[in-house]
Image (cartoon, rainbow, N blue to C red; front, side, top):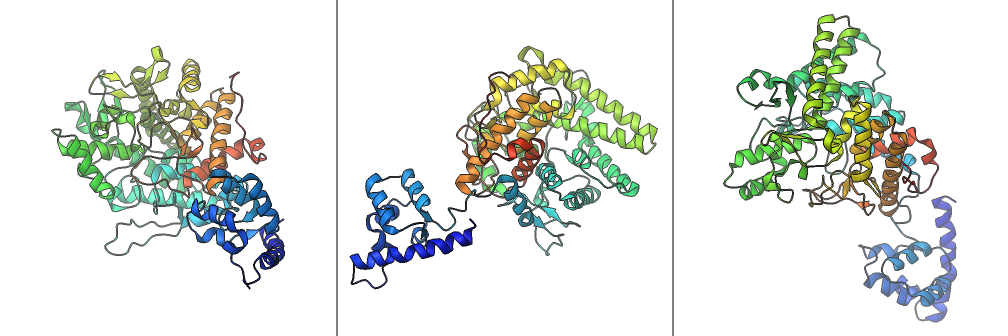
Amino acid sequence: MNMLSRIAMTASLSLPAMAAAQVASPTIANPSPADIYGGLFDAVQQQRVFADGKTFVDALPKREAAAILADYARTRPQGAALKAFVLANFIVPGENDRGTSDLRTHVRTLWPQLVRQPVVPVAGSSALPLPAPYVVPGGRFREIYYWDSYFTMLGLKADGQQPLVESMLDDFTSLIERYGHIPNGTRTYYLSRSQPPFFALMLDLSENKDPAVAARRLKALRGEHDYWMKGVGCVTARAACLRVVRMPDGSLLNRYYDDRDTPRDESYAEDVATAAKAAPRAAADTQRALRAGAESGWDFSSRWLRDPQSLATIHTTDIVPVDLNSLLFAMERRIADGCSAAADVACGTRYAGLATQRKAAIDRYLWQATIARYADWDLSTARPTNSVNAAILFPLFVGIASPAQVKAVAATTRNALLATGGLRTTTLSTGLQWDEPNGWAPLQWVAIAGLAANGEAMLAKEIAMRWLGTVQAAYEDTGKMLEKYNIEARTPGGGGEYPVQDGFGWTNGVTSVILDRYPDLRARPKIEFGDFSGL
């Protein structure tokens, strides 16, 4: 039965309820909900079952008031049980519609709401111009964001929105052509940094066969590589310069960085306060490390901290991250392939060589056989960090892990990172949003795709099932797709510098692409957890 039919039916049911109330209180010509429902009304309003007192008084009963009141008098529910009772007996504005459609349908209805048209900035604003339509994450994120967009585009492709995939690629190509890189987001205050470099993988999603477009995009991709490797010219005299790091054997890897060392415009007061707590360390050092943490996308996480419980100890620029270097390997391989397809042999040979060298450095410094996982490298200690986190799946995702490495990482994932509701971000609970208990859609997909491509199909599907269970549970409770989730309790996530946001681009995208890959999960109104005991 559709909503209009239900409303029509319940409207008719309300007439005898009102008549009954009038018999009980003949002096009241038009009884209000307080008159009709008495003790039930008082309990709902006094216990603030709904944040807005107007919500319940606008509800429509699903059956006669006398029957509802009789059941209430018999059970006397309290707290959450009272809300459940009300939702079972009334059509409540903005409540009963929560989570009523399946996830795939809901995501498809959200895409048009997140689409924005080409931007021509108003003088004095912080917006950067964009030439083509694009999709924003949602909530406070009103502009296009770099690494978010890859996961959004996965879902757009799965949901038949290929024109938006191509137009977003045009936007990113334009950004590289104008600024030399893709900024964190399309605001002037984001121009001093980038984000995890997914442009190469975005190009895999294109269906455009125009050679001129391919040549333009390949040139842009090479320009992005130049941005990340700009420090090569100055790293000879020191261990690190800009985003380039020289490892002890002379090989080159990369780190996250920011060209500025001032408080972030969008988090100015927070950064000033954090730098003050870090004294006597120079404020500029702390602020650069905070900005570099923002470039990582993991802003913020114990992964970047000397003391996992103190953000003031952040030292992102000392860390050589496994995810960043995996993505740069993927970039170099795709440039090599693109050059070879264009019959540019010298270019193809050069970038294939760079990719080979990077893989060797990753295996030497970031692979830790004794602890059965990849690890970030700390330049300040010349040792791997202790952080166990979801970035260990990135080498599988880009295809550089050996069978033995895959087996070891899969075991570590099962033992340390697999939670009730999906993949943990880290194994430490610090109150920071990129730490346990929060789970994030992009990391789920990296794990699912990486494991599935490397012979760990059962574990990949288990993560998918558990994650969808979390998204489904929160959707049924809130009616929203959220930026992050508590994967231990299967509720909205917490922590960070702002409230949890809804929308939400990368959650939508990953939900669609998971359901596209595992269609048997689509038919389930509730995603049940799988049994992974035999994995």
